[in-house]
Image 1 (cartoon, one colour):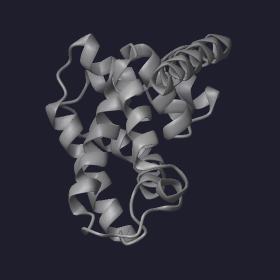
Image 2: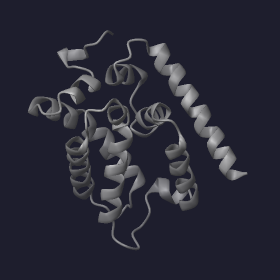
Image 3: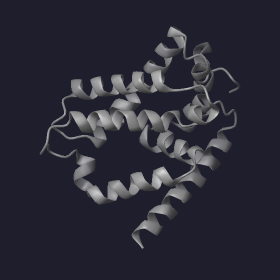
Image 4: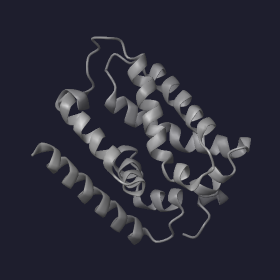
Length: 175
């Protein structure tokens, strides 16, 4: 797989290194817009119009890119920061008393809060694995490209370890 993605695009880390570039920003927005919209629709109210979700995602993407420094720790938390920015914008835009999404209706609010708390307690690297694979739905091939990791087996191992850590934290919370 190497350091270049299909179509000659650079991995996400390289794009983050070039945040001042309009081309890099455009690639990042195009790459993350649809997965973030899918995730936000699952987590939001059914009363949120698709246009509202898309606006929140676009604003969250731009906010995260604008606020991101070039420090390695901030770049390693890129997916988490995207998720948080979009989640906050959708939460603020959701009307009070709105009908919960199918996901929210099937999982109690306290269970979602425990899940979010468990994610916050994880290492940045583990949290990135969970958010990128589970929440944004990227395949292991996409993750290898996005994260600049040439070995897909390494992605599998890191994702599995992160999920074990998440399950342990959720189990500890329930006890």
